[in-house]
Amino acid sequence: MAAEASKPVVECLDVDNYATWRILMKYVLISKGLWAAVESDTVEHEDDQKALATIGLVDGAGESLPS
Image 1 (cartoon, helix red, strand yellow):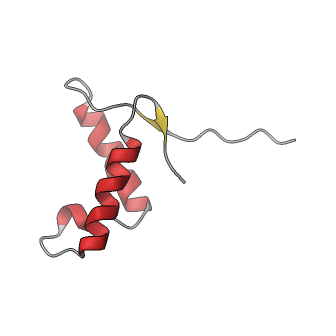
Image 2 (cartoon, rainbow, N blue to C red):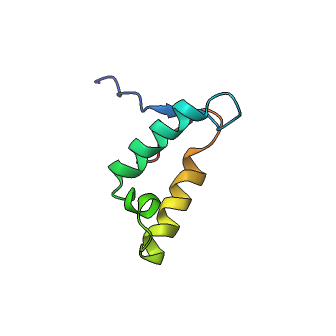
Image 3 (tube, rainbow, N blue to C red):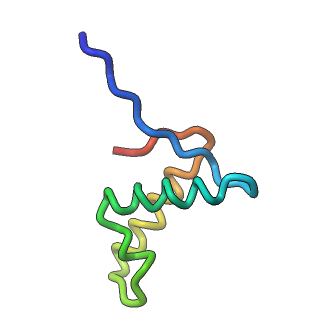
């Protein structure tokens, strides 16, 4: 059986890791097609909610990125 590739891990946001956290979170949102929800002033409500949920789900203590 082939070894399963490990998923990137995003540490829980704290006062010491914002610079790294924000870059990783940007990559997560880009990979899910949700980065426009952060940058755009006019974004669909559904995309905004998906982006918010993704950030909430990923920002856990040592949580693997959701598929």
